[in-house]
Length: 223
Image (cartoon, rainbow, N blue to C red):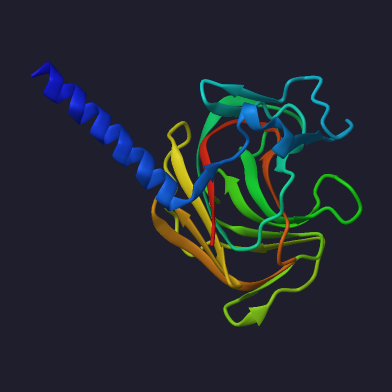
């Protein structure tokens, strides 16, 4: 019986590995891949994190929220399927002490004039009660409901439904960009759709924005 159990364990591990490889998904922001990502914080140089705002703990990315900033890929992406899970912590910081907990996934990040808060990009909003909104930053644009959004410093496209779990629970968020079609899913439910993103390609960034947050199982598959 022990031999049979060992065989089954090896079988499941092998098939699980094969499935992962066939899926062509890769994990982002692993410590062993330090050359593939960097941290940028308001008031600091690129790659400097004196307060330890971003830490990898037990396989999770812990963003303290103490400083506005992001952890960013060095690589740019255009057609992809990004998945992650997030959970709010308890700490909050000025200037958002009395505001909703806020963070987000920035993608198609265009660092045309260097890293800053916040670079031209599209955002999948992660904010209490608003998870799945589209934010367009620094004149980014999309077509939503057959209408081109206005080019503004910030523009919001509200989600179509609420699929967010209560604060303190894990939520899964997916961002799919495929041949100009954008889809956001929260906990398996489609909550927003748009098309024709501008910029069309760029870096992916996870925000620290005044609230403690944990990210885990951050993976991307190129389409």
